[in-house]
Amino acid sequence: MTPRELWIWSRTYRDRIRDEARMRRVEIYTLSALIRSMVWAKHPPKFDKVFPDNRRRREMTDEEMKQQVLALNAMLGGRVREASHGSSKKLNGPRGRGLQRDHKTG
Image (cartoon, rainbow, N blue to C red):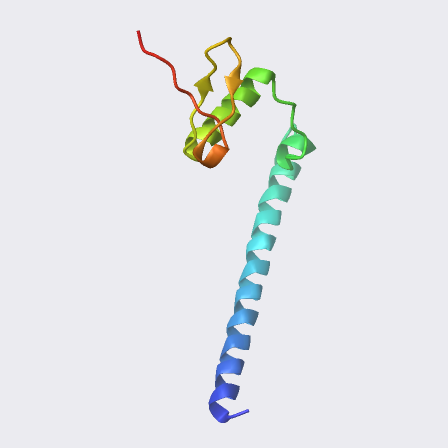
């Protein structure tokens, strides 16, 4: 290891230690603000409000799922094409993938 490499390594190590110490201070400050709100509040907020659990998701309805598919389809450049022999839709798109929508105006 050359002196230059040693200097770069030591500077990087020093910066990392400084950043970790700063993050610890931020965590301590955040924790103290949370503890303060719990101690001095007449009615502390419920656990679920303070720490929301994003894993609990409700199932999408059929209409919401359809809207999500159409939004993703539009984002990816597909179209929805309605079949001429009924109300069912064919799933087509660029190179045979995605939804296509072609319908007459009038």
